[in-house]
Image (cartoon, rainbow, N blue to C red; front, side):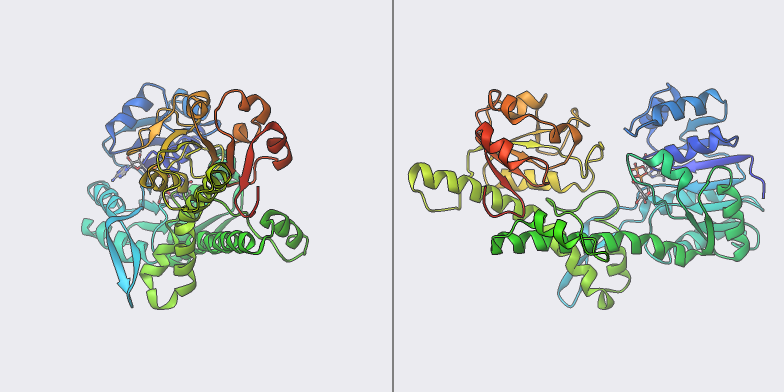
Length: 449
Ligand SMILES: NC(=O)c1ccc[n+]([C@@H]2O[C@H](COP(=O)([O-])OP(=O)(O)OC[C@H]3O[C@@H](n4cnc5c(N)ncnc54)[C@H](O)[C@@H]3O)[C@@H](O)[C@H]2O)c1
């Protein structure tokens, strides 16, 4: 199939790179977003998200004359949906007394409904949003068929999961293998034809529900493995073992690849998608459920570690025994709020959860996020810069392994802060160097400084 015009609904981390990549490869693209600020930003030649190379790509797309942004759809040969699929804020499901999160599919529903008046015979509709299994056939298809046209007969319908890594999106978009699942083999073929416009990786055709399951299986595998790593960190602390050393040694085995523990699991994908399986079949997903519980409780584990760090110091200074309340009134510099290193994405970030929990304990936290210094986070005090965050702090708490934090020189830092306690939740700082400089360094997964 030949595609001359494409409408991309949702111009975020996925939709904008995808839309502009199609545009620079010769397809006429209308990017549609319900947020008028985003559309205006793009119309003015700016971008609203941080992703390496994206600014240049978008400006090439605009210069090519193939890309424009609007809040309104138009007729096109193909429609691609890349809108958010978070979970519901205020509603939980329940199975045998266990509560689980539910997918909020309102954006997919309204984006699909918006396509209906523009849908024509021969069109292709592709859902890229990570979605619960069967969304394409049970949610998207019936809505589109309100047009009077039949999926797989009058128009093609596909699901194609996006599997790019933030920070590498532009390269991976082109190079990664892509799975295209159609409601019919002909729909899968049409999806294949659309992506051949720029994808250099293999394009594999399958059915829509398999394609949905592939994406959720990938993220669930990561989540379960991260839960295991986090549980290993907790065990290592109890057993007096350095988890980082133990993981390195275990990973020497040719068939073992333990992931790195950390302050929790966040982001728009790994911490969300496993719930889609739990929601689909709570009676079959006890391991997946348990992994989510472990990862969601990891910020609490970090806060207990912070308390113990202050308690150790308090005991030395005053012989005080009670751990509870030990961080009340303490000033803590939280370094990093993003959900992973070197990105500006704060969604579902465990770092923000750690900050909230510390605040609940009465600590005064100043957070410094170099990738989003102007972020307005509910109830979190954002420092103006690193110096502002650490100057009056009693402790420096590293929550994200941003490259610039890894490179911090403890000797230089010492003169810029009152803090002598440093806590590293991501294995970024060298214990000897920090101790030598004069800090007491505590590390997640290690039960001594
Ligand atoms: N960010 C990632 O790294 C990543 C990776 C793989 C898959 N995904 C999946 O891709 C989907 C999109 O994620 P994202 O990170 O790009 O989200 P995002 O929040 O960055 O962008 C989504 C955009 O969609 C817009 N939008 C919401 N409802 C709309 C509607 N009805 N019509 C048009 N626009 C609408 C929003 O205003 C927003 O700009 C999600 O399902 C996500 O799980 C994301």
